[in-house]
View 1 (tube, protein in one colour):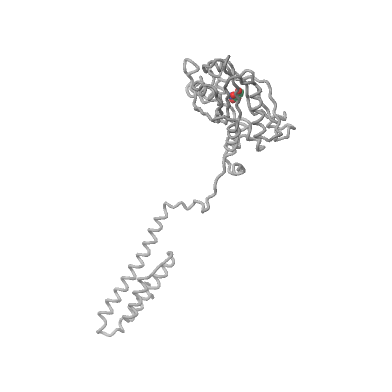
View 2: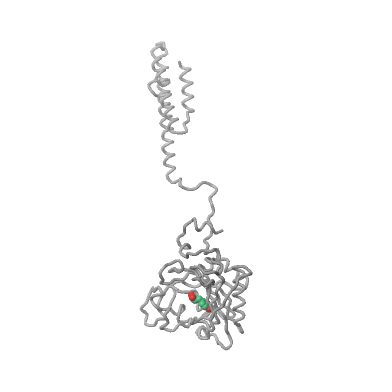
Length: 341
Ligand code: DAH
């Protein structure tokens, strides 16, 4: 009997359980009514009297050991459960899938690349801006309709001098005035950034969107230089066969001014709702920097001149990818976003 007890003691010492069911099976095997320990207890009465003391002690030892061991295993499970609490079981397994860039970032980076190859550097300015840099320094008259509540989001709108009002910039042209006020020519910069307008949201307009502004200031800059830069950009962006069209236009900060259209590649020029049935899509405004703007920036317009243009990133992305609803860019629907690599 002592031999059997020793054998069981060794077994118990080495017990292992992988889960709660295995542990319960062990408990039944050793500690239940019909378990190994009770079986030996039942045999106890057959033990010769002179061995009863020793066998009894060993039997008790076995029973205690088995109880301790099983309790210890149980505790291990429970503490392992606690250890799981800070594990994120919803996390996806390896390999972790990489995300994709937002189509607006892809297009913005492409625009930056094209102009970087032409020697333009990146400049930036604040989105919360004063009226001076957005409007006054850009030659907007005090009563110009673009300053109207309908277009502009105001942060502080009670300054005695309108130029001191604080607003959300409505165009990245504000960065032109920021750069010119503390830089001497030559200047060759582009400014990508977000702009805000108090407009109703629809498939072709949003209350915020993205622009890239360009400014070139030097001596003897001509309209031909501007046209050449625009043509080069359009062909790099949309392919060598891309057609552009310059229409005379008006902006307070340029004279002369022109809007540039690109042949609409959503409808192939036939006319659709995005190009308003014209076959062309306006993508940017441009012109020769107005002498007043040069003067306000401290330059002498008789010696220094330049060109500027500004484009909407959403517009260009819509043309490039054939997207006909601008709101898709801001809904962050993964089914949409994952299509762009
Ligand atoms: N700031 C104009 C807008 O938001 C775009 C623009 C037009 C920028 C002509 C220019 C420019 O630099 O020369 O509609």
